[in-house]
Length: 405
Image 1 (cartoon, rainbow, N blue to C red):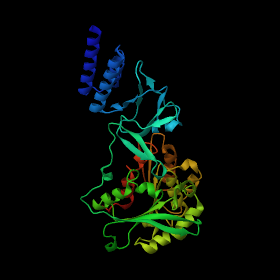
Image 2: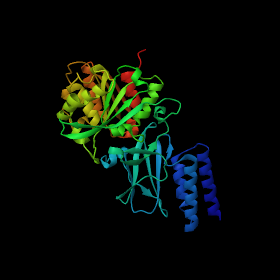
Image 3: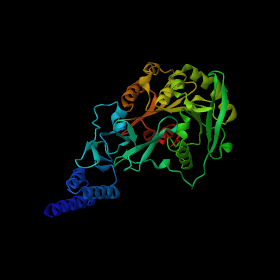
Image 4: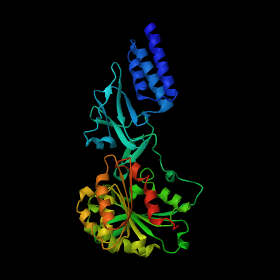
């Protein structure tokens, strides 16, 4: 009884301390280990479950304190580890991602540290085969080509989602022309694109245009959510009304066949398709300004590589390039191409700092500075994910289309 009273008193102290905002990971972990010392296995499991549920209810799991995180997995397993942006989904061996089991329990845990404003995708890997969402964590971010599937999302204390991503009922919404089918003689196959038209576009005359690679993903509410962003920015007069063309790289009759890796790999034929077919068709059917200084190209990852390639290879087509987490290392010849532009180009470039493209982007930043390009460059404590890119789309659009002061 004395032992039980001592343990009970300690756990009460531990949880009271947490509740009083002394949210240290050591208290939570010590509380769990203390519960594991209860002799009766039924009472032990009940105590552990009650303690975990209380921590989850009051503070949430993973348990975050300042720059430290306690991940918890509850389940029978021989091995548990955590895979995600923080270890490059397994490619960065320097991050220690192996879980530790608390003796006499089915509780596994991992302690890690991240910047206090970081946001990261992850999954729990059980027995090296089963990749699971963290059932303790309600936050998720969708990722992957074509929508993919959700990942669990770690949000550190100072991370904030952008309110521009919230759909609003108090504003008017633009019009979307979907699945416009075209036959490309240049590419030798069919493809789709979608067009966003701002409110009252018929009364506004000709408007600037943005061509968006990976358009399906940029449009998807769980990925880029760019339609909502456009509606909000235009309604709040943070940008001028613009027309946006979302190119879909998926084959129209077989959406599982995504051609982005071929089309977006500094593909000269794909650039010719834009010049000879897509841009002329768009300008024949929609009221866009037919000038390069009113025409932008936007993309992430391979699309970011393509945005730089299009703008610097043919500046008479695109006077602006939005570049997110660019895959410059996939085609390092991009640096030479951008090193001597025939005219200044407006660039807005972003990158995450955690296993993303910051090194490659900083190298390009030096080239942009040397060539007197007009550029904005932003880095965030995030990784190669739509959770990163969606939060910065509005910044890029404001860089290019803000009303003059």
